[in-house]
Length: 407
Image (cartoon, rainbow, N blue to C red; front, side, top):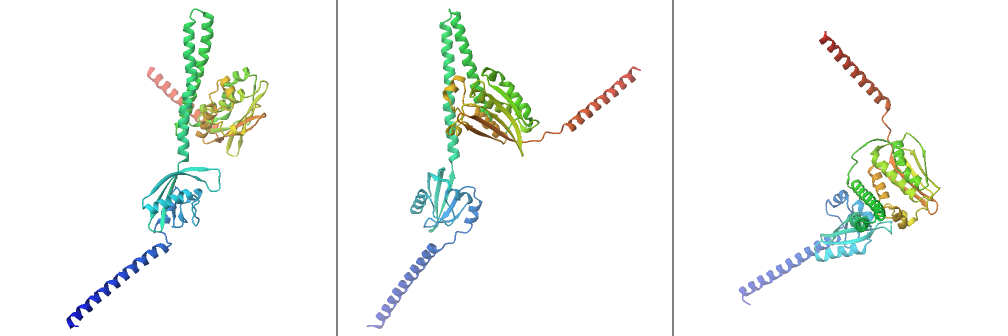
């Protein structure tokens, strides 16, 4: 072989070997990087700190759907560090995000950890964090869904409730017009018309009152409220109703208790409880109203000897327009808003309403409010006395000046 040809052949062989070696090295490096990515269990820098600062459920999971790190609220939805994701739907969402490389979003229901019967509606989003990890973020929208349903029900129920008295007023007005030549019928229809108009006015007032309590961020009037005055006002307001129903109102408990809030709102809340107790009490029975202080809480209890409330109804009696006894409520003109107003009025004062009831033994509604110590009367009396003395002093100076001018 010619030396030149041999040199060229050696050069080509060397180039081929060099390319092959380079390819092998590149493939080895790439394989090592992939293996390192797969085997690396360390979280990306800063992920743990970000998760710790989140108020919403969020977790980072690896390829086996094991949670590597999670925010504190995530545990309630079954996303605990070191554990596999409980939800098959969440695992499917992570799988979809990893396979497509695009964030996946869905709405699903998750069972709260330790509470098998408590399902939460959440929107979940999964995103890939490199070749090994994925980020799952969930937002609990259960309360939002409930509020939306409440708004829908409120509009539907309000429309339904208003149709009845409005329709009755319309029909009665037509009847009065048709019976214009019959004074006796006119009087009958006029009486019924007044009753329906009064019912419509009460219903409208209660709807507006409930809306005001729900919308207002805080009470418009805030002062020291005497529970004695609140109870006395509520009892006096419903004394005629109790007498007509032959139900005795008995007042007891401690005196001199005070809370911080709006006296009118609280009087209406207690009054609603008394009105309900009278309606559901048999003739000849009594309704007890008592107040006492337990530690830093003032309790106002209204107890009746009525028909009681079933356990199923007890969970719903504070809902708007809900009536435990539909027939009795229709006869008495009940709107189903009284207890809802009580609940929201008490909540506006930072308190709660509790219910005890047994079928055939009666019911007891208890309003619990933060207690307040009234401002001492002595300093106020001293201020009034000082103001009166100052006024007399000014009057004397004015009289002396006037006398000097006359002289």
